[in-house]
Image (cartoon, rainbow, N blue to C red; front, side):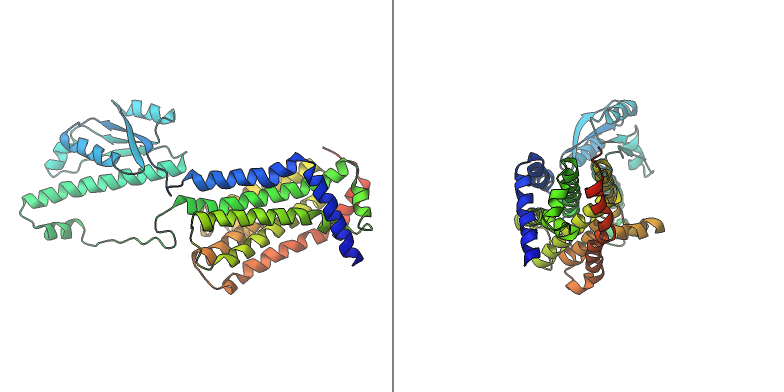
Amino acid sequence: MNGLRQVLAIAKREQKRMMARGIYTFCIILAPIVAFLFFTTLMGEGLPADLPAGVVDEDNTATTREVIRNLDSFQQTNIIEHYPDVAAARKAMQQGKIYAFYYIPKGTTQLAISGKQPTVSFYTAASYLIPASLEYRDMKMMSEYASGAVGRATLYAKGYTESQAMAVLQPIKMEMHAVNNPSLNYSIYLCNTILPGIIMLLIMQVAIYSIYVEMKEETAKEWLGMADNDIVKALIGKLLPQMVIWALMALFCLFLLYGVWRFPLNSGIWPMILNMFLLINSSLALGVFFCGLVPSLRWALSLATLWGVLSFPISGFSFPHMAFPDTLKGLAWLFPLRHYFLIYVDQALNGLPLYYSWLNIAIMLAFWGLPIMLLGRLKKFLLEYHYTH
């Protein structure tokens, strides 16, 4: 009971310190809420719409003008300008005015009517991955539609019926079924990993700051003295208020994702609550671990930031994990966000029983043991080292 009272006393002390410093309010409450609202509303329609594009139509016939009108009618593409030549369109793309342009050379219609194979081109600014990819898809689809329309008209002229013409143009009918995200909603793809990643990054930084500020203000001995110099009880008392607030923020995040925006949640909310709880505590453990590595606030924060930023690409949500080099595949196991992402896929998207995620849950729990290796070193830092920037 004495140990519990000490932990609660330290937690109460930490709560007062947090309320007296605006940086805690900003990092734990304001910054996450702004990030939650920004990313969940960034693509409220599911995909970006009316992305600016240009056209270079050197043929300028009724057929090519119809192709351009059809392209402009696509939801993601908005033709904002007709350029006289490729050089002008390329300059506009380099200036960031458009993300792509569609090029129809002179004589395209005549070649199509005569049964020859005309060539049209489309150029995208690949440095803007999402808008360029979406406009590339629209332009490619429009080219296939135009080619099919010309071929169908030619076959009709030769006396083919509609069913005979379609059998020639499309001998195998393709159907696409996007599993778990049939609307191809980019917000589902983005928010379910980037928001927990932001939470993880902020948790590590706040935990590191709260520990090293004791060294900076020369209150570390007072803090440890409240726990009879037991570093474990001191850390539990200090991190307990943070964990409670982060848990509330995580629940708010889950409420936005699955309650307000109705993102796929095939195994119910409890597995995702467990997933968030594991991520919060793994992040706190990593923060303490980085504090034990280096006796410097600046270096500890730099390590946490580097680890947090690397977590986004290495988690596998933006680039397939199976395509990683073997070294990176092994390194990915050291990032909590990777395991959070795999649990999310198993539970929220695929709706599998929880035991399918046992390995990732076990590894997330194993992160809690990381600080144990450096507790003695961290205690020495707090008692003997003077604060360095």
